[in-house]
Amino acid sequence: MLLETLQALLPDLNTAVLQTIYMVAVALAAAIIFGLPLGVLLFVTDEGLFLKNKVLNSVTGWIVNLIRSIPYIILLVALLPLTKLIAGSTIGPTAASVSLSVAAIPFFARLVETSLREIDKGVIESAVAVGASPWMIITNILVPEAKPGIIQGLTITTISLIGYSAMAGIIGGGGIGDLAIRFGYYRYDNTIMFTTVIVLVVLVQIIQISGDRISRVVDKR
Image 1 (spheres, rainbow, N blue to C red):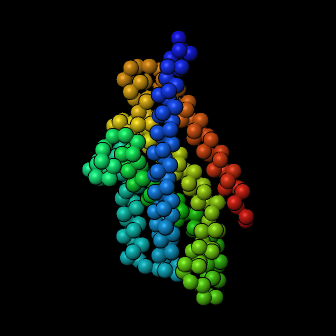
Image 2: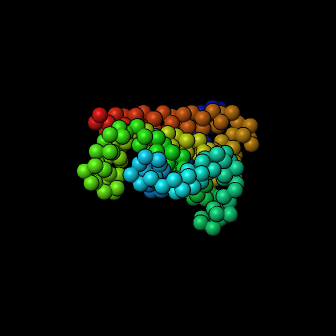
Image 3: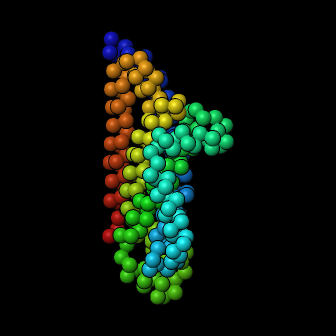
């Protein structure tokens, strides 16, 4: 009976896994494109840095903290009008990717900022002293030096996004969470619930192990 249930579930499970990967990939791309520069901006405009700007830093930090303080399920519902505008629908993996991206950007930005703060300030001061431009400092010193931490930040962000994508299933966002809600929770099928949990655990473990290994490889310190 158990084997038959799993075999019947397999096509839907494969689709759900692919949908989850799609949602996470889109949100992760948004986090890298927007969150990485945002994290750098938060760092370089802070007190004592070469692009110090108290107003810009405070406003940017406040916006980042505001979005991060909103529980994802509430953010998901609050962004439904924006989701409808961008994706043309409020259900499905593409629609869920909108709120996932909004949640991922400030989350990753703070992790990038934290990684940059671990860099020896003396290295930055030396670069400023020899006349290096802000762009050169950012691209040749800050990002390369913080690369292991940034990769760890990407790993953490990816794992968080997998959890968020499961929540998106509550409103028909697709993915593993949607499968668990529709076929497991609503039908009181513990086999499906346990299967989806196992799949999520395996995904998280693969991502964590891969992220740790890549981080060690790029760490030249």
